Amino acid sequence: MTTRPRFALSATVLDAPDAQELAWFYRQLLDWPVKEDGADWVMLAPPEGGAGLSFQTEPHFVRPRWPATPDEQQMMLHLDIEVDDLPTAVAHATACGAVLAGFQPQEDVRVLFDPVSHPFCLFVRTPEASG
Image (cartoon, rainbow, N blue to C red; front, side, top):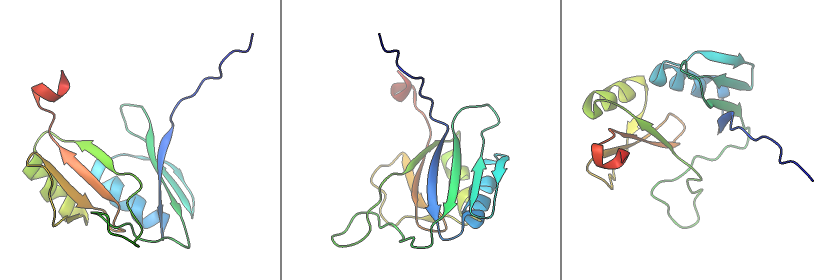
């Protein structure tokens, strides 16, 4: 009998023209410490444990486009970040260097772009959503 190997998600990796610069943005946004720090690779780890967020330098990086348009680099993923106060979190994110997206598809979620245009969403968990 073959046993199944253990799988554990350790991080989501975002490509960027400069891993250090994008990691700095997310470090300021999330207040997570650096776990690994290299010239072209940085990993942030949440203080409470769990999967981290990593950044790698990609010399051929193409900024994603959201909402999607034909013939442009589309968003391949986005981060959902739970916050406890949406207006304050948006203000903090923009002070860190994020840009609020012009198109907001939901009233209770805010879509923003990090400094290299990766979209991410800020939201407050409601009792209906946690059930």
